[in-house]
Amino acid sequence: MKCVVCRQAETQIGTTTVTLERADLTLVFKNVPAQVCPNCGESYVDEQTSGQLLRDAEETARAGTKVEVREFAAV
Picture 1 (tube, rainbow, N blue to C red):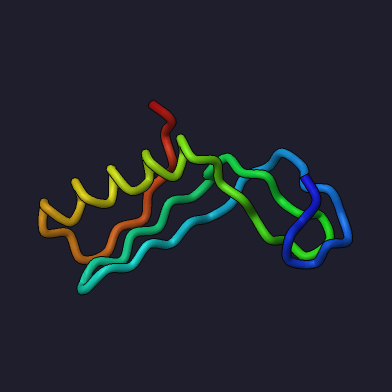
Picture 2: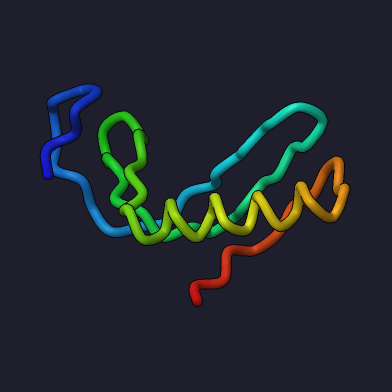
């Protein structure tokens, strides 16, 4: 797909880091599969991966965690 930010390049399969913040929780996922623009670095995560990230964030918030960094693990 063409990058919607820079409109200069086609995205490529790669990985990205996703940071989610809500209230007192900061959750960082490393090595998340994504389409990444080689020109500007913008990344796009698919719907299934986004859903998993949000579910994991909800579980982490319920556990009372304040800050966590983890490797992404696809289910």
